Length: 431
Image (cartoon, rainbow, N blue to C red; front, side):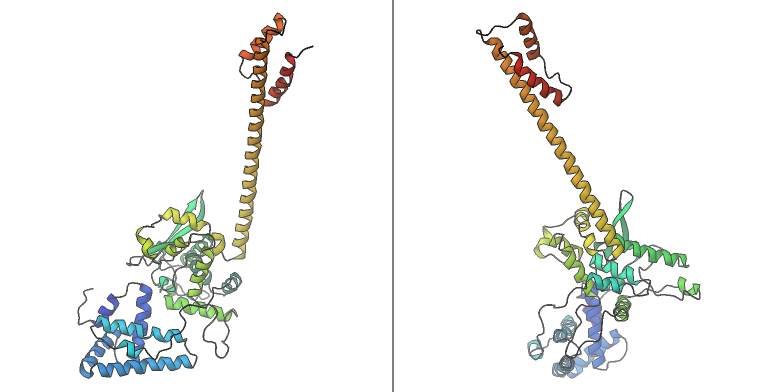
């Protein structure tokens, strides 16, 4: 799309790189348009605002902006939103105005805003909480939650995910993980991985849709709306509609409440212990960093690693090898966790058996070496004995000793060699 100065909304969106930022910034900018009671589509509202600024001037705009932010400030005082959220409402507006060459005194405008926290105090959900969450009776919940927990994707990624973005990874005819392409076709595209458990749930969901009558292709949306299964509404099955990120969030929130995990907040408390969507991303980061390189975790989360971007570029296989270490940490269901536990125990036992076999082999090698050294000492002693003019031996003894010294090891195994070394020490002993 060609962007011109006559398209203020296009100028605004041009400045946003992340699909998630585009979604959030546009939504909050629309809040400002609605606050001013501007009519029409978002594009029409944006054009109307620019015209009103030209007509009424910056003093008018400053007053409207301060009234808008004061409205959200009062919401924060009532506990409807957090103090930190208030500042999030002016950032989209500031960007919109800057991209359309409108300059305000933002230092004056934001002086009265609450500062809020500079860090997040919410936690990641626990394994028990997630296990209880996925018991919610919706066929999609397990696939959604397992995918988010094991890949660290943002909620907004669901607006892009199609079946072709999921590729299983096999080893010895067994699926060990799956690759997930995030924001496919966008400038922010990157890839991560999901656990075998998550891939299994996605595959079950896709197979169920196919068996119900939907034609599944590579371009089929990963998440879609439900249909009336009881009445066999085939028409609804075939006319699938993408479940947007906002729909995924509502589904998770419904499940949290229905399962008794999220209850009404006490008076004065402004936020829940963990976020309905971002909590799974935090779960991924918290658990994978226990066993993976932190910088690899950042790469799989689609984060910029700063100056390292130019120097640290691990290939897909290197990231996969590191990710495989974390699969037990991001596996949710009790069944799969138990299977991994048994598998890990078997691997430990096999490793111990391999170590024991190596130790036995090494011990045998040491014994053989000791026997060979003993044999060499015997030969050296025999040579010294034959070269000593003061000692007298029969011709038969001399011949036997010379033949022994000429030979290499004539022993079939190290035990017989040791026996010969014992006997050899007596061959030249004095009677």
